[in-house]
Image (cartoon, rainbow over all chains, first blue to last red; front, side):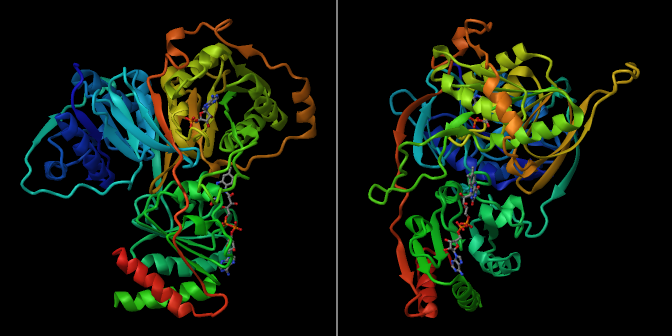
Length: 332
Length: 277
Ligand SMILES: Cc1cc2nc3c(=O)[nH]c(=O)nc-3n(C[C@H](O)[C@H](O)[C@H](O)COP(=O)(O)OP(=O)(O)OC[C@H]3O[C@@H](n4cnc5c(N)ncnc54)[C@H](O)[C@@H]3O)c2cc1C
Ligand SMILES: Nc1ncnc2c1ncn2[C@@H]1O[C@H](COP(=O)(O)O)[C@@H](O)[C@H]1O
């Protein structure tokens, strides 16, 4: 087969390589080892230093393809797609993994069409099939109620996006060596149609909930927006983020970027607190794969207790302040 | 401004309950509805039409009964519906689906904007929207949360400038909102924040009852059969698992004894045992 190698698509903003890029490498390393092929991290952006690229090597990459150009500073779907498609045609990787982020979930379907490749969205498990060497891609579907395993037996590359935070970044090995290959942008690949006019950062708790290890989420049981102060305090003890159910967002207690669920964000933190949230399936769809789920609700029959690892039935206005008090003592 | 909106019919899941014994979802007798996330695309389309004129065509690829979804969209205020239906489409993955839809959209022609839902609640991939943009080589904004402005260049004015029709949007990314300007025709996939879907109107319902929905397929579209259905789909589903969603964790009830302090202490012990504090 002329296609060879496992690629992970790194992400950078303002010259900083993002955490998801390292998570992808722990996925990619396992696949590359099974196939006995090379693991490449491709990073596109502007101002990404060799020093940073070295970190990717320490985290498992055999090679880093690094493309820096001022025109690639911002993620513009058309430009990134053209560049990646061009590289795929030249280097013919067998597998390409990207993070299931606003970038990965935009650029990968665009490229998959042009390269006639199979693409599986938002995978939570990846493996290599013993006899065929095909990539086995497992993903939750129908709001997480089924797990489908998918392969693309006759098409190369095999492409997948991987749910952020569903793996730990690979542990760094200072002694690992690898190669950094500087790629030059062929400016004829720049599309030029779409212009980025600006960027507005999320107000308030600037933590991106999809990156957070710990999320404290509040629902309609919080009664009013001001009461989210105690949720913020709770999240604070873990350096975590605040989340919310749709009912809390629809009541304007907190803004939409914090909504977890079917019509909001899908999160996979290590620890998820569901406070005053009933556990409607649309909410569960966004948080069910969290490693540990803690539920606090006054209704013992609330569905949230079915998916929780630890639950307390009672008034959240008594429980959460007590929890904050005991946590404050713990961290002291 | 002419708009095309691809919509999908999906199983209604909001009343689905968990089966306590098997720990899986009970899914019998569920109804079909318009993908709830497509309602935001429909609403956005109708608002744009109200402001800038033009017409809206909704299109779906699905079984003959999916015309119900199209009629519902028409009842909300869309103008025409097209049903892409035939055995040749069966088993299409997102690659083949976006091919078929993009060919049908070409056939519709004369469009300025395509609005898709961020993802469908069943397949849950979010790949069809960007896929259509790729097939048609349109500019693309995913996760669009706001239409900021539309610039339609007056046809009467001079053609010597490079100015062209464009749309300015905000799209939601992990840490904020990006503002983009896209020349038309463009494709936007939209999130909930962009609009609040209206209900069908009486007049709309009357119109939708009478309207004929044309059915398109290999018989009347110039499609490449090798790109359709299961044979045209690069991906294969090889296994389906129904994972147990229930966890059967510890639950402490403090309503009777009021011993919140002790319950919280147990919770802290749990967190410590998992090395979370
Ligand atoms: C198409 C579609 C998409 C949707 N998308 C989402 C989504 O993305 N995210 C989402 O969250 N929802 C979504 N929903 C809505 C979902 O169905 C539920 O309506 C919503 O999740 C309920 O939010 P909640 O749990 O905060 O409110 P409720 O269901 O009203 O639950 C509030 C809970 O708080 C408890 N409570 C009240 N007071 C106290 C107290 N003092 N102490 C302790 N507990 C208390 C109550 O017992 C109750 O269980 C969607 C629905 C549809 C149809
Ligand atoms: N069969 C279909 N017919 C029409 N539109 C579709 C179809 N499948 C997906 N779409 C559109 O593509 C969006 C994303 O769907 P998906 O990629 O399946 O998650 C949906 O919100 C619809 O706008």
